[in-house]
Image (cartoon, rainbow, N blue to C red; front, side, top):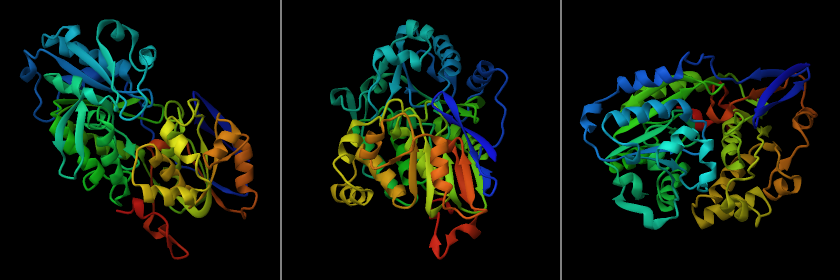
Length: 436
C-alpha cells in the first residue's frame, strides 16, 4: 500500500492506494519561500518594473488599491503594510487611501468578514470597501473593448488619482494566468463586463497557461489599459502558499516577468493519461466553495483518460458559492441537459459553472468528497462519496493491475502538460487544450 495526503479545507485527508497500481504525484516543483516576506515586498516596491516611478505620483490626492476577496490566498498581511507605507510617503493620508475588495461577480463580502482578508491594524487605519458587480450606480462606463466587451468599472476605483492592483500570479483555467490588471479589470467590473469577457472561455485559445494569444486574457489586458492602472503588486506562491517572489511595477511588465516564474513552479510534465486522478484544489481558500473548486476538476480532466475517474476532494464549507449556478442546475436532470440548455440560452456567469462541470463530467466519471449534504450534491448532478478512501476504493475496484493513478494536491494552480506522444489514445485526442 502507498499512502498519500491531500489538502482539504484547513486540514488534510489521507488515503492509500493498493500496490498493484502505478501511482504518481502530480506536484508543483519545490521552491522554498523567501526568508523575510516583508523585506521581499519592500525590495520589489523599491525596484519597480517597467517605466513606473514613485516620483510620478507625488502630489496625488487619492489612491485606491484593489485587493482580492476571501476566495484567493493572497498574502495581504505581507503585501499591504509596505505598500500602504509607500503610499503615505507620497504625502497621502490614510483617509486618502481606499482599499477595495475586488469580488468580481462573487457575493460581496460583509464588513464583518473583512478581517479574513485584511489585517485588523489596516482595517483600523484605512477605509475599506467591497465591490458589488450589480450596484450599477457605482459603475463608470468606459466604453467597449475591441472584442466587444462593455466596460463598466467600480466608480470609487476610477475616481482615485492613483490606481493600484494587488494579487497573485498563478495559472487560471481559461484566463491563462491571474495577476496584473485582472484584480480590477474583472474584480471591480460590472456583471455585464464579466459576462461578456468570460463568454470567451469557449474559444480554444482561452485556456490554462496561455497568455499572449488568449482572447479572454487579452481582453482583460485591454480593459486594464482603459481603466488606467498605474501599478501592480503581485506575489508568486509555492505549494505551501508561501511567497517565492514579489514583483511590482507597471502591470504589463509585472506579468511579463512573473509568468515564466509561475510557469516554472506550476507546470508539470505528464507522460501518459491516468485511469484515476485524485484532485484537490489545494485546501482553503481554494476549496471554500464548489465555484472555486471546479477548477481542480478541469485541470485533472486534462490528464485523465476518457471514461476514467476524477475524485474531486474539496471541503466546500460555503456550499456552491453561487446561488445563480445552484438554482439553475437544480432544474435539470443530467449533464447532457446542462450542455444543451446552456448552449441554447447563451453565456451567463453562474450557470457557466454548471456548464464547466458538465463538460468534464460527460468525459470522465466524477466523485466528490466534500462537506456538502449527499442529497444536495446529487441535485448538483455530481456523485457524492462517503469519504476519500471510499472514493478511491470505488474508483479502482474494476481497474486492471498497473492502472495509472495520479494525485494532484494543488490542482487549481497546476498546469499538467501531457506529452505529445500521449495526446491520442485509441484515436481520440485527449488534451488539445494544453497542446501548444
